[in-house]
Structures are given as structure tokens and as C-alpha cells.
Image (tube, rainbow, N blue to C red; front, side, top):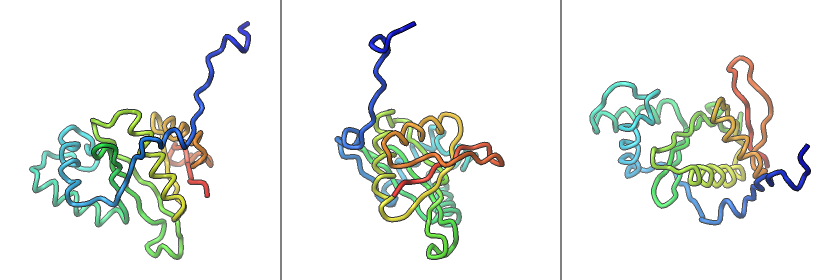
Amino acid sequence: MKSSSDLKPRPKWRLKKTLKRKPKFRPTQVEDLKFAWAAYKRGAFGDIFAEELSPQEFRDAFSNEVTQAYHAIWTLLADKPVGMVFGFWAHPLPKLAPYLILDRVVWFDWATPRTRVEGAVNFLNETRQDFPMIGFAEGDDKRFFEMICKHGIIRRVGTSHNLSKAVFETRK
């Protein structure tokens, strides 16, 4: 049997340390579409836009998808955009159900594991001050969000057996 001194120390996730490089996010802007296009060409949006689209067709389809299906979309930034977060209000009138459902996070191919963690932690930490959020995850995404839970900004609140996904919510 191994003694406690023989075991590897578990990493300690600290908000201050993760956010040391000061990642940012902003509402998605028109100039972010060129990064979304590059990500689309590499398959990042394959489940949304399955067919082969030209740049202009992609721009139009992306604009239609965002305005019809989502109430909010943000671009996560490191040195350059590394991903996008898509969400919608639980009710068409946010006053009646004032929480946002995070539908998807699309990571661009060039996002490193470190920039993904920093971007997600910064986004969730900042936006949880404005409104509560809830999200669903499975597989690798579930492990990713469980690691973010160790920062103390979100928590797992259960499992949706209908969707077979873990359910997470932001902490106040």
C-alpha cells in the first residue's frame, strides 16, 4: 500500500491563478465572423452547418442561426478569438425566467487546452454576476465542466436522464 507521501499531489485550481493572463470575452461582432469561418472550414460548426457553404453563404447562415435560435453569443478571447458561447433565455421575456441556458461552446481548432480553461472560467465567473446560467454536458465536455467546478464558480446539480447529460449551474 502506498503512503500518502508517495501519491501525486492533486492540482489545486485557483481562480486567481487561472485568470492571471487576463482572458477576455465580448459579444460577438462582425469581425469575429472571419474566425468563425476559419473554424467552420475545420469542422467546428459541423452539426449546425453541415453542407459546404461559401464565405457569404456562411455569413448569412450564421447570422440567421444566431438571430433565430439564440439570444446571446459571445466570443472568447486570448491573443485572438479562441471560441464562441451560444445561449438563450429560458423564457422569451427574461424577467419571467431570468436565467440563461448555455446551449453550446464552440472551440476553435487553434484554442489550446489552457486557453479553453481560461476563457471558460473567465466567461462564467464574470457573467454569473449578472444573471444565473444553466448548461448541459456529456462525455469530454462533462469532465471539462467538472474541472471548472473546482474553481468554485459553477456546480453540478444533477443528471438529466431524458437527455443523458450532466446539468451544471453557475454559483452566485
